[in-house]
Amino acid sequence: MTWLVLTSVAGGLLIGRLTGAAGLDDPRVEQITTVSLCVLLVCVGYEVGSPGEHWQELRRLGLRSLLVPAAIAVGSLVGPVMIAPLLKLPAMQAATVGAGFGWYSLTGVLLAKVHGPALGALGFLTNVIRELLAFVLISALAVRVDPLAAIAPAGATAMDTTLPLIQRAAGSTTAIVAFVSGAVLSSAVPLLVPLLAKLCP
Image (tube, rainbow, N blue to C red; front, top):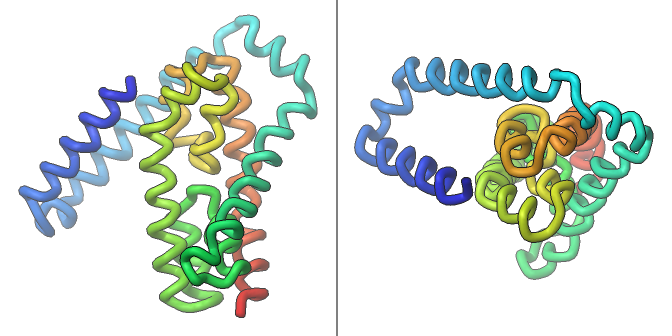
């Protein structure tokens, strides 16, 4: 699965390179992407919604399933702060960028409005890279570490764009936890990013 994802991304990069700006402006690209994502999510929803032991497992976990997004949130905030000195970036700005949890489109816009275009661009690019890394790492983490570990790099995208890959690599039970985690983190982004941005120097 990892090789399939890498090959797909590489193919997209090659096509984008060959078509240039014309390809980016083509409305069919967005339409194909949207339809493809919807089909994937319908398929995942069908399998997750089917009767099975994964729903019993989620009920058994109860509120403990919320520990997953909590741990991801802490890691997403603490990690950037730890490497901020290496990048000569104020710790609060680094934490604010990390608070995007992979939701690059909203993070970039929020930071640009509250703090300025420079931090907005950094927030956008950082969270785009996070999502790309998630596509590469999810399968490996599910197999080599733990199925729940596969949710971590996805962040907020665990409820949409990376959910099909998580379901494929880690199973339906993990996919349900991933959806809950992604929903919690996505709900936190519009509140946390502006709050932290206002505290930035």
